[in-house]
Amino acid sequence: MPAPRPAVLLLSGGLDSTTLLALARAEGFAVHALSFRYGQRNARELEAARRIASAAGVAQHRIAEIDLRMFGGSALTSDLEVPKDAEDDGHIPITYVPARNTIFLSFALAWAEVLGATDIFIGVNALDYSGYPDCRPAFIEAFERMANLATRAGVEGTSPLHIRTPLISMTKAQIIAAGVQHGVDYSATLSCYDPDEQGRACGHCDACRLRARGFAEAGVKDPTVYRPS
Amino acid sequence: MPAPRPAVLLLSGGLDSTTLLALARAEGFAVHALSFRYGQRNARELEAARRIASAAGVAQHRIAEIDLRMFGGSALTSDLEVPKDAEDDGHIPITYVPARNTIFLSFALAWAEVLGATDIFIGVNALDYSGYPDCRPAFIEAFERMANLATRAGVEGTSPLHIRTPLISMTKAQIIAAGVQHGVDYSATLSCYDPDEQGRACGHCDACRLRARGFAEAGVKDPTVYRPS
Image 1 (cartoon, each protein chain N blue to C red):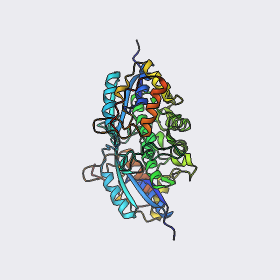
Image 2: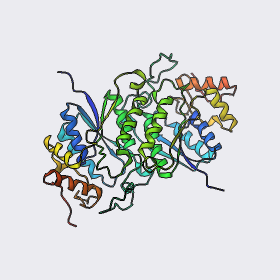
Image 3: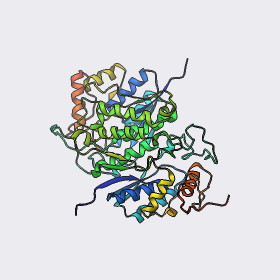
Image 4: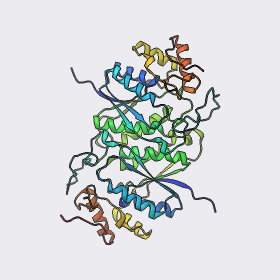
């Protein structure tokens, strides 16, 4: 039996990347999971990522330390208030972290090159993307093209690199249904932008609302623990 | 008088990025210089970067802490021996750090977005590039295209972002001549991959050899302090 092919997978500990991990494992990849401590307010998601990686049987799980607070500009990494029950006004929300997916994918690219992996998995989603520019298919395609010019693969003509985004055109309900089919336990995942100290979700931020609607539409019981409001 | 436009500039403390800084200042930019402590053996270059940024009168100088050693794969961030007096055999040298410029540019992109800067300066060079894939014009063009899709500019149609590479087609001698014309003091710069504890250059690694040849060809006295061999 040949050794499973390595893949690098960006794992936040949220619903999407946990589903992504189940799909990559189902394809037979030896998953090298990468998480980031980037100054996010919600550092609890890293504990969730650790438990999820361990339960899924990844080949390796590493947490990169980078401090995106040094640049400011986002409610997720600063003292700006996370908006609650906000209307979608067509603008990029304050929870957007400048260039975050570009930075995350760049680190994944470095690891993929060292491992000789040709697949990088990222759980971006173009439907429920909350207006983030770096979740759009055009961005992913441009990153993939750049990545193939950035690395040994581009110079030496070896296997090209693929940015894999199996969730990109799925609704949250479809993502949940796919995860349930692959045995994902969503009670371990954390999506809330602003959980309390016990890790209970606020129920009102964009991430909580998208998640709750997804469970309802998928007809799956929502296992999220919400704090009393 | 309008306020000078901000630009982000990647500053290593070497000869190329120091020249780059002089060129950006000459264009009238308020330079936000960005350096990285990335686990490089040669951490002395950061001291050089600090002195150079201060002497050039930058608007800000920040050092981002990222640990590229976590992925391994390069002589510049591990215990692998830096090659001395190596022949160019057409292969990518062991001093290549996987995806380094992609990661550096991604951080610069985040800062540029927060500052509202439309120009990012990087001192890559396609002639003396030692075979690094991420110094080629095709890589820079692909990164610029991706960057414009990754950020607010891409979604909101505001000013596009430019990756500025004024050194890309210059020889080392031309770079040195341009720097001297703009008053650069090269004695403050450090290029060696493997300096000793007093910051003296080895004189034999790729970086030292390219630099020494550049001074000779430019007809400029080499101010580098070499250690006795």
